[in-house]
Image (cartoon, rainbow, N blue to C red; front, side, top):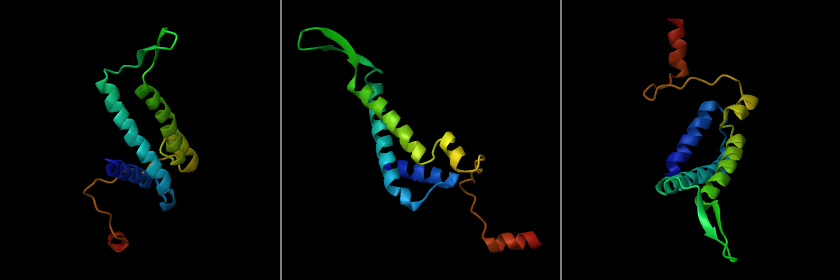
Length: 124
């Protein structure tokens, strides 16, 4: 799962023109957090999207508190937003760093033409 997530993140960064080998460590941390978030999201769904539960403290008083999964998801959301900023994977940071237009994705089956073929097709 992590290798697929990493491939998607790297592909997106390459597509946007912001990928560099130097970012591998940061990408690995980001991908790890994405994997954790997805696992928590699955557990959260299985719990019936339970946000709070009852808690009885030492004094015997019962209170409502956020579930540990929901609390972890909230923290991860903030960290994921921070890392997506660092990696220029959201529109706001991408706009500041790069050109405002996003390149059009090539079709999966479309192979890029070599420079020789491009030059020959321009002259004919």
